Image (cartoon, rainbow, N blue to C red; front, side, top):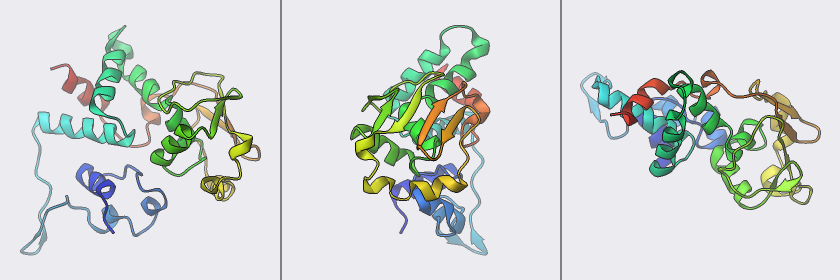
Length: 211
């Protein structure tokens, strides 16, 4: 079944890992249908994607990153404004830090769950602790040295029943460390632009909002 989340990936022409296990299997609609949603058969096959204007390219990159982190336009725009403050040479790095250090994103990147949408839900439901304290704000900004763990009273929840199996083969990004036996992670460094899971032109996104 092709859901609205799958259509988002097809429009972006790239996997944004919005559908948990399905994204990692041959059943992924983007794997089977690499053309945009709504395109019909024509002659020998599917129509190729049209070339885009500079504005169209910037818009696509912006939408791709916004959907990747499941953000509303106002929130995403505020993050851009925050990144634009300070030295111009640091804009891209600041934006990467702002997005990647969200608590819901870190929970996902540690491998505790298989999608950012589930990560957001479990944070909202109070299943995650930061430095031993319950935090139920998905946008909570982490910093180097913070410790992230499933709260003891939540470990047995159904959403975590396959976490041990998934973690055996999962490797978090270099700026995170994960104690797989304790299901506890640490922020050990600052994420860089290249650490963003999906290849995105951050400069194009900055230019889009600088018009």
